[in-house]
Length: 291
Image (tube, rainbow, N blue to C red; front, side):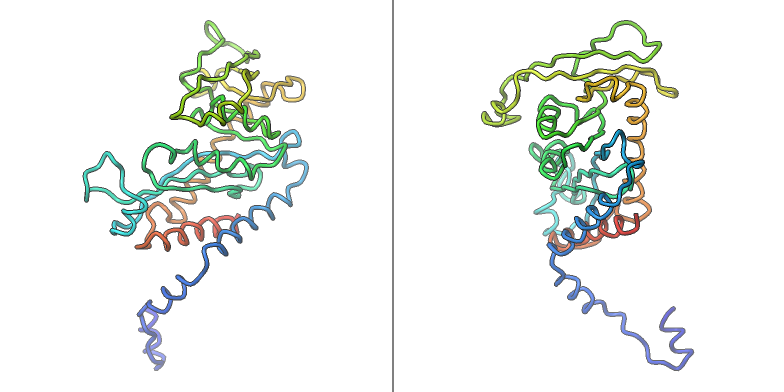
């Protein structure tokens, strides 16, 4: 269309060869893109006003996502397809975990890896973010992230969590819930398991952890909602306000949908892992700039 209009204006046609563009794009350092991404996140957080904080805290909504990439030998080697699929019947996959600021919608932290089993799941990626969280931050996540290890580790860093109760954890509540209920519960340290953490990591965990559990009924949901949080002060953090905040976790799902669908990141386009890394980070950089 562009060349047709140029021809009508008696101008020479523009080359459709994208080699020069691709060569130039490949020379952009990945470290530069990551630095700019991190800078946009810091700029957004630095401009948060007091009324944008929840009880004086920055709220980070954490969730995971998976995108696919072109089926090239190079991509398959670094980001292989799902192990449940036969060779040649699937596309390379990249798993991500994002921490999105509730107030700004900006992606504050991001980790990603291949999908190859143990030590590449969302929980592992989530733990790689811990050093970037600030004292006073509040992490809100679904039941996948509710574990003794993470609750205790973040609490020691001055970072609290609110999570939906993990299905493996026994509820202290009995009978049907009619109003908001809450109670404190002491969780014992899990048994040492070399498949889950090293001996040093296990020894560093406290022998017990006191958490606050809140149960309530939610309109439009058949089952009752049971939350686990390290916010123990019921006067400073009323149960009703915690429930109200947790309902806003859905904003994270909408932000991820915008990144994947509206921005077209569901399927990446680059044919090598090095360029996939650049493409991925440029998507998140562009998203942060827009936000």
